[in-house]
Image (cartoon, rainbow, N blue to C red; front, side, top):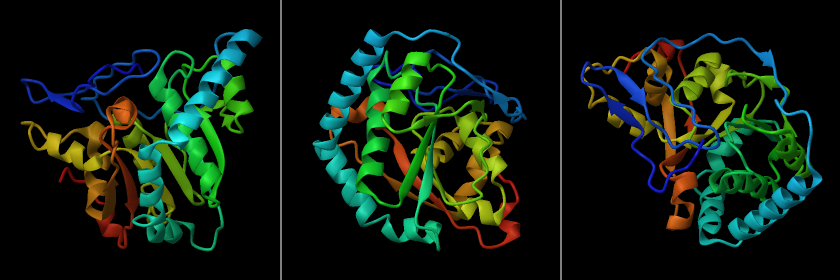
Amino acid sequence: MEASAKPPAIHNCTSDGGWTVVLPRRGRQRSKATKVGVSEEKQEPWAPTDSQTDPSRETSMMQKMERCINRVGSSEFYSTMRCQIQTSLSDYVHRVLGSETKMEMVVYGIGSIESYEPPRLQLSLAILMRRDFSWIGNIEVYDPVLSLSESRVIESLGCSVMSVNEHGRREAQKPTMFFMPHCEAELYNNLLQANWKLNLLRNMVLFGNSFETYKEHASLCKNSRVNSMEHILSVRRFTTEFRIKTVSDDYYNAFHDSSWHFFSPVLETELQLSDS
């Protein structure tokens, strides 16, 4: 999704009470109107549309990524983020881990790391967290805009690129961190819908757009009952959210309005859908 200098608000409310999701975009522009119900896409095989790679492009991308990783790793932004994980989030992370020693990381919607800086910053953060926290395991990455060259660079950085488009519907059968900064609301809703069971939700850590902000914008619209967001609005009843600090303008486009989300449903009755 392409980043803009000052990304727009998360939602605009139309005059008839409908919804338009307006999110920062990276890579290709992907504008979605989400007034209709949540789609039921099935998983399908995926591969980059281009069939050839260019070694010089790969070298240039790898150099950009290495510089970006070093820059983020030495920044006040990352120092603050790492401190937050070690202190405020530690108990919640270990509650999700349970008896497991690792949780895998699933990165959805990363965007083009060749064309835009925000995706490079976001991927750098994921890689740095894996380096610095022993409980983070393998990193899987997916975005339909990825080229073959980008995929090869991502794999050279120690991540794997998915060969399936899951449409955000990965079930958390084991502890899993979903890393999704600035994805469309529909993708978050798909993920929650696929995991709408007590045991699955408890296995999840979600890093992405603030669900509290979604609720604030929903309350401003005439028609706050939106099928494509009903799981986002309903999950807040048993969500603990920690907002991050972007610290400086250098990281605003990549991480503004991002939060950590932990889910702790206790009763099946909590899973009844509502818009409040």
